[in-house]
Length: 260
Image (cartoon, rainbow, N blue to C red; front, side):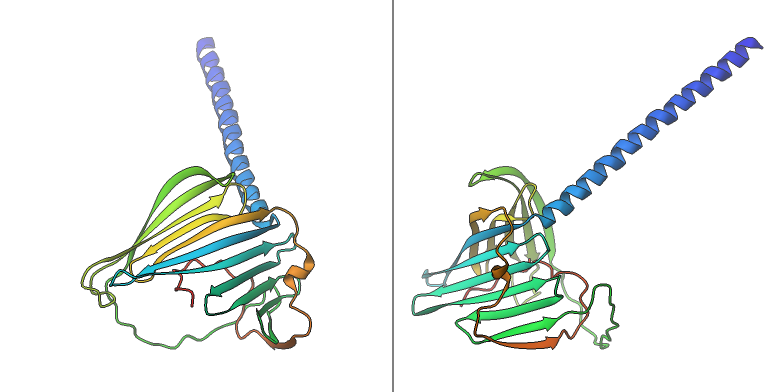
């Protein structure tokens, strides 16, 4: 009888110890997930100014190569304001700069170009506002679907910045777009570790050519407030946004068109 009681006591003690260990392990896993989430959120809010050089190459059927270059500047401040400035360079005309600013503080999205005279401002709905949109009932014939696969390229140091890369391969099956053979395009994207900043992107598309986007300068500090303001002397045209938008616009990840 004493042995049975002893065995039961030992079993209860071991069970309690197991529960304590498993609880500690679960706490560590939950803690690590929380740290990862906090790290990602912190990276998304880390202010910076990033400058890029974009090169687009297209080879024609007769072997002629057309090369176009443009520059891009992206800025993010600690308040969540985002600015994208793209300048298209052409040999036969003056450069044209297009600017887009998203301001979550003022709840606006602003557009202008230089040279130019007008600033367009969209007043966004207040945070948390929801709208019901009506989608017309339109039947779209189904066809062959494109497939996308991804490949982890590991980490690499690019211009002194540690970055992690992925390669995405998109295959459009024959007949999906009038093509008699599958169309295969690839996008290779490298992101700085600990920062929500792209370091390099290389896109190869059989229809549009090759586009390389390379980081040339990175400043990790709050940009000047004038970065998010339009030039003086421009006419400001303000209107309400036609849709509901609770969050910042997503970064563009679609295949680029050739710069004009």
